[in-house]
Amino acid sequence: HLATSLPLPSERDHLRPRIDLVVFMIDIKSKYSLKNVETSLAHVDASFFLGKACFLVTGVGRVNACSIEMNAVCKLGETYCSPVLFCELELEGIRASTAQRLVRMLAICAGHIPGVSALSFVSLMRKSGDD
Amino acid sequence: EKADPQKTAFLLRKAWTLYSVTPLYGFRRARLRDYARLLGAFIAAEKQKGLAVEVGVELDIKVALSSLADIRGSELDQAALLVQLSSRSRGSSRNSEDKPVWWGWFCSVFGDDLSENVPEHFTCLPLFLSHGAESYTALVGSWFQKTFDCSFRRLAISPLNLSWMVAMWAGCKLDRAASAVELVFSVPRLAQPLDISYAIHPEDAKALWDTVQKTPGEITQEEVDVFMDCLYAHFHRHFKIHLSAAKLVKISTAVASAHCDGIVKILHSQYLPGVLMLLTELAISQIQ
Image 1 (tube, each protein chain N blue to C red):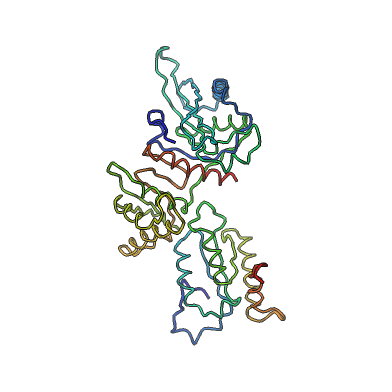
Image 2 (tube, rainbow over the protein chains, first blue to last red):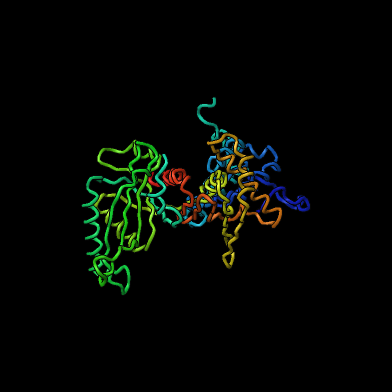
């Protein structure tokens, strides 16, 4: 399901299937997309940040078109304990492999992979010095 | 370091195309005259080969290389190097004046990040600026690349860096009446390309920057973000357009103007070192 911002309209709540993974898309060329994601984050239930949310930064092939400071994005990932993935949608190969990666994450979040749960992502996010 | 305004006047108000240049190997400041002669011969030879630069015009190109001792940041920087191409049409008398047709200069203003890590025999002048026909730039560039084993790359300026420039330069104190602060955005993904030009009264822009900047002489990314967000919010209030979703392609202030394709114009001699310092930094980060 694609949405340009959150919260999702409440009228369709009863028709919507369970949401297993939220991918926040940030376009490196658009400051607005970062602001939009920042405001949308406030509308997401905290339980999603136990491995059921991630950030996808697109357009990274174009370093010269960068409108966003990378530190800000990485800090966002740290603050929300969620992985930050980078990709370039305009390259077919990367687009396909990113999609495969997201589907794999989704399968884990939906509980389809025995022995691995979304919480595994959270422990992968912790830096080795933390414990 | 204040550059002599007389000598550097020719640098102002010209549109310079920017390049980053890797360190030059075996460059000797004492041999400038030799280099000028060799470059002149190279250009003449290329023209003989039929790589005509000016179609239908018989021109002799004279090359002059000189040092611009005042253009550097610290003693650790190399003095800037100027290459000037002048034409003298063959038909005219010996007393006729040479007409400058192309300028290119190499410089480094506080380029310590690069020069401190470089081995012996290398000269660091990471920023190159050219003005004049692209064909001459290509000739001069290829001669330097062959002779000093360096490489030139066009220096693009990202929207992020452009926003730093507009915030910094809009906040500069100027004695004369300043021209408007202008930002030009290009709107992506439309059937017909659309450019939006946003002009702000220079006093308003400076007043805004003064409320944002906390420590004079220091600028942080947060301060630049707040400055830009205020401009975006103001525009959105009036026109319901999110400029933050568009691509910032050009900025213009009374100090200098810059285009994302890597073209700058410096308008004010007082801020020449500051502008060059920023551009040197961009050139170095492209090299590294």
